[in-house]
Image (cartoon, rainbow, N blue to C red; front, side, top):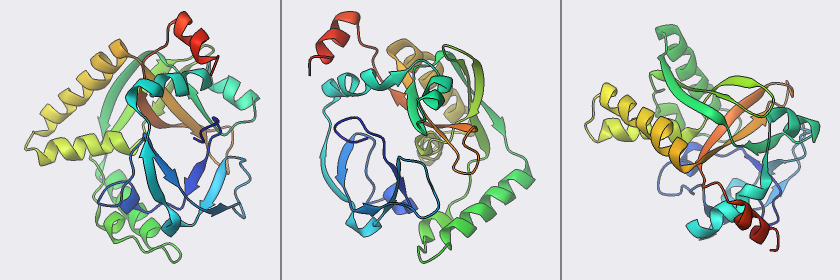
Length: 227
């Protein structure tokens, strides 16, 4: 997201920029060079010169809701009507749940990691070595127009699982912690979903990010509109 509220879809981004010493976080400000992609016609998409990525700051927590809340739209359908390929919605009655992957699904996902890691000139040893999480993470929710069930494609949800296991928690303990985080804490405090469509199938939408975000009061919204 640019400072003036325009979406940017960055790719290719190697796994080391999502986890590791060179990673950048959700609320960090980065600077980078890019060019329009050759095949992806979505207006928000940027072909990033990966080595140009530079972390230059971070957004204070007190400013995050004021920045993002005005960009929240009522439904996925409304995002599509506006001809956007990325957008934010505030889900109604969201419920996080999980489903164990089959051995075939795990093997296919691992093979996909290897293919992606070896694609083109962007060798990504960290991604190739990564084992898929054994569970699919999903959300059931409604927006202002329709009910949905989306698989959670947010890397941070899978990182939660990995981190819990590294701390020595059992799978059951990690899953219970994730359920409490999303179904209790986030629902009570406020959350938004970042959603995006697919380049080849623009009417197919996916859950790309789960963001803990306070909902502004009407007074706060009026104040935010003045900036």
